[in-house]
Amino acid sequence: MKHLAAIKEQLPVLVAADVYFQDSELGGMPVVRMRGDSMSEALRDGDFAIIDTTQTEVAQGGIFALLDDVAKLIIVQVTPVHGSRGRRILCTYANPRYPPFELPLEDPVKIVGRVAQKFTRYL
Image (tube, rainbow, N blue to C red; front, side, top):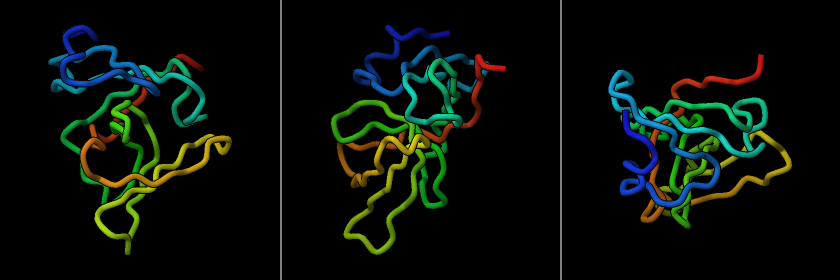
């Protein structure tokens, strides 16, 4: 099991989620802990999400972890923007208090992976 210190070389400073650990039993998929209320009921503050780093294709949309244009890890609902110049994605938070925004799929923006599973601390 790797902890945050071992992963910091791979990922820069994190915002919406913190890398908690990577576990070989999970196929090396990182587990991140959600911070804040941006994803509302989908992922609450303190929830853990397993990120499948083999699933980086956003053509069908879904909830993804990505490095945004200032290289911070965020978890958002991603939808491809059709008819735009270059590859662009629309990023939408589950909490309507936060406005949607578009990002180009070019450096430094990087899809880290699809949220494959969550573990919540709420019952």
